[in-house]
Length: 269
Length: 272
Image (cartoon, rainbow over all chains, first blue to last red; front, side):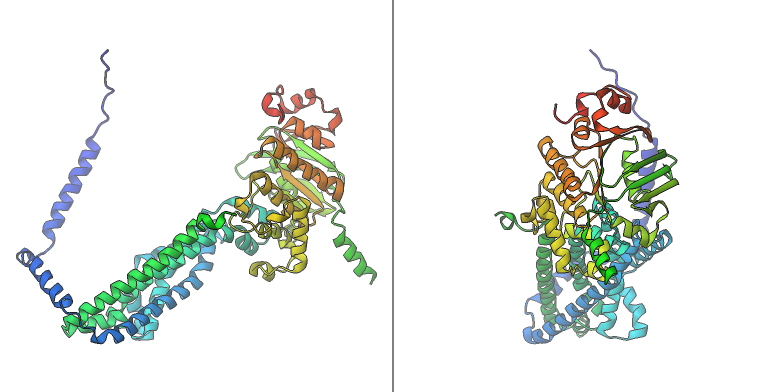
């Protein structure tokens, strides 16, 4: 028995697309103005700076570093709370079937625009009003948080089972009661998890915001880099990494507990 | 004083059952499908009615029209003397608060407690701020506990709703309807997701609501034997029209074949 293969579908289209992508990659590579000669020095330079920073970290400024880290975390925390307070009602309005459709579309657009702008740009805009204070950083994180929390929020509400909503409506519930008893019990674990995740993001972002001088550990890092005190910079990096990893781990563990529910042994009787 | 007593009496007698009066009621969905075609019928207070028909016959639309979840597009519909067909907003929600509804899929909020699910039945009877904060009055909680006791699962009050079996979940849903202290209970294929013994237990609960509390009960079913056993009156729907309306005792196999437009098959009965 000799099987006759069906005619192979035309591959012209994919070939054309592949060639175009190839050309774009090559042109893009050569159009970037890079001093290739310096590339050779890169590995030795990296090793030199790593040695400067970490061969003898300067722990004398540790107290100041911890204080500034705490300010960064505070900035992240306040930014997260403000973001939650504004984003949660907006995400209900942006969800299908709750807000008026034009409001829904407008809010989804606003969330998308905010997500397209990095927090540091938002901070520079806010800076002109509130000045170089940690509040500026917190507000920038809050605004940035509205973009992500709003989007995660309405997507989660859109995905909630419709049955409980119908039941609350059938029992005579108003829209707010439908949200409270038809939507919230299903959506709340995801919301709590989003809030914690946004806090993790804000802890990392708050260090970056220090670069423009709104205070916190990022501010200190910029200063000592400019003073070229590499021992202090090395110590600061260690503090940032340790604190960020620790907060990520704690928050991540809480989030897992929320989304996966209690461990099995708690449920057994 | 007299008025006060009368009000208390009205609240206490949750069993003051409602009639349903329909005159030429039609339901046409926005996509053009006509689910109900000019239906006229009277359900008297305290009746136990089985509505039968194949899927797509309009029985689900009928039950949803009676509590306003599906708006009627023409005709007159009154429940307990209230014009539900024209009711909107607050008035519609108040009427729904007096009508219990039971669903095929139970429609419980699985991630919260059984008690919280039952208290959904009190939403229309409680100030909004209380319901939003979840600060329930002792009286409301007592009503919820009594409702759970009536369907025999009071012990599960603090459990997560999703941890219960299907039959238990449907009982919670019945308790939720009972906590409304309803004048009318509507059930949309209440046992279609349950195994036969559980199905009978749940149908017995519905019958007790009718016989012990005197509440009007309207149940959608597609199973011939359940409709015969648990209803006193049978309404047959086919393609959005009433094709039979009479006593269950007179509903022979021939009547069901007329309603279904085909012969009775094994899948049309629960106990084979």
